[in-house]
Image (cartoon, rainbow, N blue to C red):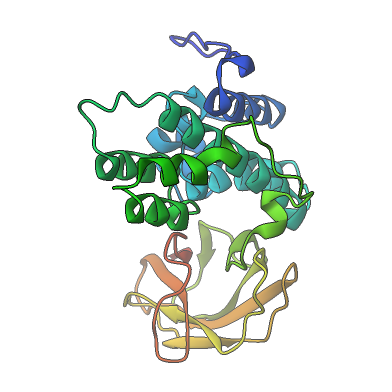
Length: 286
């Protein structure tokens, strides 16, 4: 990874452990994508994660959440390097689940049994490997008083008694809902429009989940001197498919900045994809 003034990047050792191996892969991806700053990834590139969370994911000291991992990958592998979103998600989800399972096994084998109860251990593991391991952690709590049963359940993750099934974590993953912003088709940020002018703003987003979008809307979150409809219907969008969403806007009658935020909702107005930042219109009326 290229260095910046005042920074001395530390090359990770992928053999240091499962979390370090995942971080090393993220580190290499960032270098391949031109080594943007974490601040740039979180703002201009649109990652739905803070710059500190993104930086921590690549340091390899703690296991990042899947949401942070995917945002790290999405803006670099999909948006910048133009990799297939569904394929990239499957690949990196498998990397993350392997790291989470291995980290769970290491934490369990390292317990002292003196100053940490099974319930406390379960709470610690949940912080390290949520949310996909939640069901496993519930099972740990349920057998807290039966130590032998606990180790029997954890045996498949110890690496000593590997299951014979050929299924991978990615194959066993449940369905999920996700999206990726692709581009401003019309009126990119900073476009100057005349006072009182009517124009059409178009965004292009992609369904990067496994669930078809039906009965969805783009709903306005704020009011500005510029006028726009409260919500716009989104056509049915299949997994992997892009969609252009158009909103008719009337500029204010006086000069100024016009910034309107929008969020995907269902028919009742309930916001969807809560981890995603809103998309927005940002023009200068003059």
